Image 1 (cartoon, rainbow, N blue to C red):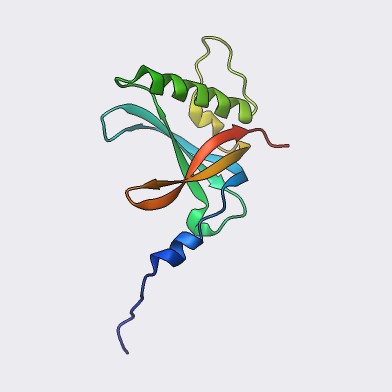
Image 2: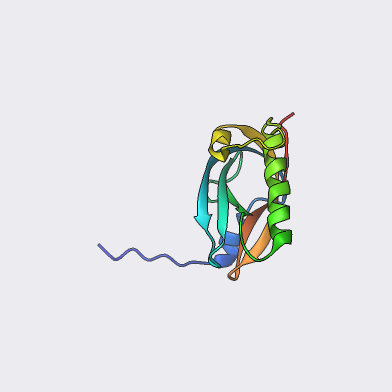
Amino acid sequence: MPDPIIRFRFADLTALIPDEGLYQAVVRSAHLRCSAAGNETIQVLYDLADVDPEWDRVSEYFVLSGPNPRAIAISRYRILSLCRACGREPEDGEELNLRSLAGLHLVLRVGHETYDGRTRLRVLAHQRCQ
C-alpha cells in the first residue's frame, strides 16, 4: 500500500473561512491566561453556529493588567458588552465569575484579521439573541 500523500493549498483553506457578519454563538468557556507579553488576560471561547467545523470556534481575549491603561479600559467595556449580550447586567462593584457565562447564547459580529501571516476570525461586537 503506498504512503498517503496530501497536497496543501492554503488558498483553499482560506476560502473556507466564514464571511464577516453576525453569527449565533454560545459561550463555551472563560479562563485566565497570561499573554505573550506577560499580561493577565481572560480568554473567552465561543462556539459559532452554522459554520464549517474548522471555523466553529473563536476566542476573544480581554487584557486585565499591563502598561497600557487604554487597553485595559477597552477590555472592561467589552466584558460589560459581553455580559449584557448574555442577559447579565452587573451592578456597580459586583464581582462576576465569567465562567458563569458558559452555555449562554448571544450573537457575535465576527470579522477577519491576519495574525502571524494567517487569516483568522475575530470578535468585533456582542449582541443579544432576538
